[in-house]
Length: 160
Image 1 (cartoon, rainbow, N blue to C red):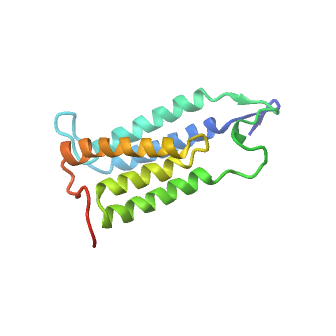
Image 2: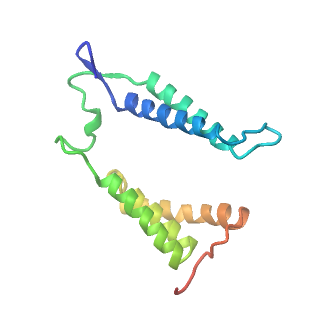
Image 3: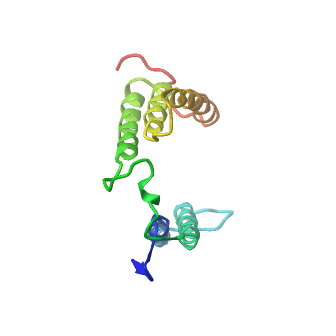
């Protein structure tokens, strides 16, 4: 999309995508009983999240700055035109590791695996920083999911 020699950056398109997804979720939620704030129906939460997502997308798209011909905002960390797939690969691998660790090892190893692997996707993180973040998130997971919400997942599971 070109306007006067300048093109919009990825924030404009990301915001537009969020508006599309949020609007679709809000529209689909109207097929269920929305109810009221005091007596929420099954469609209330998806409708509210869809509207909030669409509003967030509008704000992001409105704040998108136009990118000039010399700007390299999308090429952070490398100087070539090939996209950097490290972040996406780490997120996908972290999610897969969370599934298998959660299924066979428990909440603590699964939390460590997903946070550590996903944090490695950011080139500015050191291995030690990823390790400290993963250990910190294990504490948060115990407090929120195991203790407060009482999720029925063992902290550590040995064997199958």
